[in-house]
Length: 334
Image 1 (tube, one colour):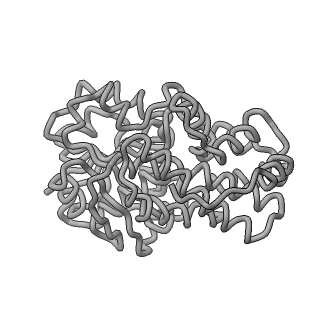
Image 2 (image 1 turned 90 degrees about the vertical axis):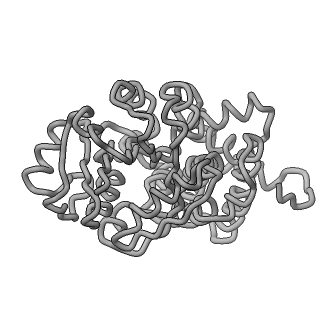
């Protein structure tokens, strides 16, 4: 029996917990930050963040980190990226070196500008040995409904990645393994910014031609940033890169794409960022990416454009016009 602790009971964490719970070989406990949400979920076996889904009776709920982590073999970190550093500090006293940590968040900490793995190295270094990243094209509701989903489990230790792969390969979820956890992490965070850009174009009423160009240029930009950090180029051709980008930047189910549509259409962006709203990771990630890119003297054109629209309130139409009128150059792939 494998005990799996899922930390974070939002839509994604709840979907992962339900999926893992489908195997009789797994004992799964879902940790809630909010006691009130836990009480509602325990009463109805439906989480308000995934309201259409009936949760299995054998799925355990708790608001205690000590209870969640006691005896756990695998820990899925499913809180938003902005909450992860704080959570790492809280779980440090309960952490055992043999535990496997699986980062399921797709973002960069806005305060420090660190990737999740960098926060782990600083705040909980004993977890790095068995650190893995789960990423890929995956909407929470589809996974919870049992729709076929493919993801990648990336870890420096292939043995560790395979352990997680075997445990999570249930209920239509097909995990692949990889060793470039850094590239997998970068891709998962970066694609949210491209998704916001795609949503802005849609909100402005731009055509499919420009949308397709954005995805191609966005993938190149994502790869350049990843390579500058030491990631492998091929990672961005896989599920975490082009796979997740194709899903998140083209679907209205995507929080980041929908947020971009609101911005492009002149809607109330504040309502989508308010308390109780689903977290739009790309809104925070773009600020961190811009800061790091400037430190690295790396030109990230799409990141700069999205940042200027979201934070400096520049006119999106004028930014697009300016980008289209830049000096003509050969196409570059890296």
